[in-house]
Length: 207
Image (cartoon, rainbow, N blue to C red; front, side, top):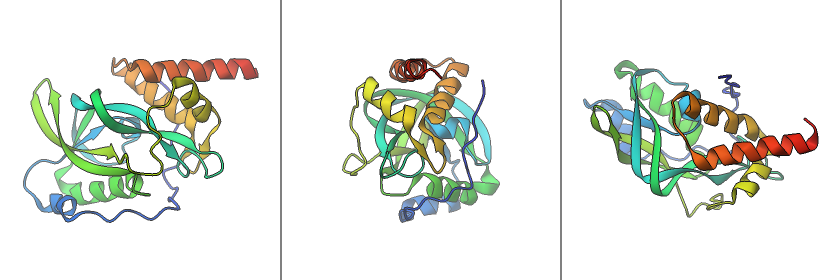
């Protein structure tokens, strides 16, 4: 599997959302801190972690439900990024943060994900082969003006195929996510259909 690296040096034009006191307090706790990854955090975590486990989160599903006008698109030509939306279930990766670098990891994730008030970090319980794990996950804010809802695969493919933002193209974001899911043996029917449609668009365009 080929991973196309994101431009991790890119800084969002949108202000970073204020970090709630409950999240900031995690760096001073004694319990292990787990983060559930379902999109780019799977293949480009950019944080130090002590352990990784596969897990299933019930009550939410992975969806291209957020317009991206910065990282993977522009205001004039928005792209899409993934969010955890209500309903269904989602297979992904749990990262246990390195105990010696929890503060740095939380700050990194917050600066990267929490801009423009499109996500909220919520405590969830993820099922693993070793038992249930309490974790933090970035859940979509449905009240955000960037919430796209449940787009048809054809529309999602059209947006992803042409969008380019500060951290790269929509097609690379999609390809890296689908490729990593395949490497993990995870089948996501909707994402695989979108990827197939993007490939057909490439064929129609002759490249």
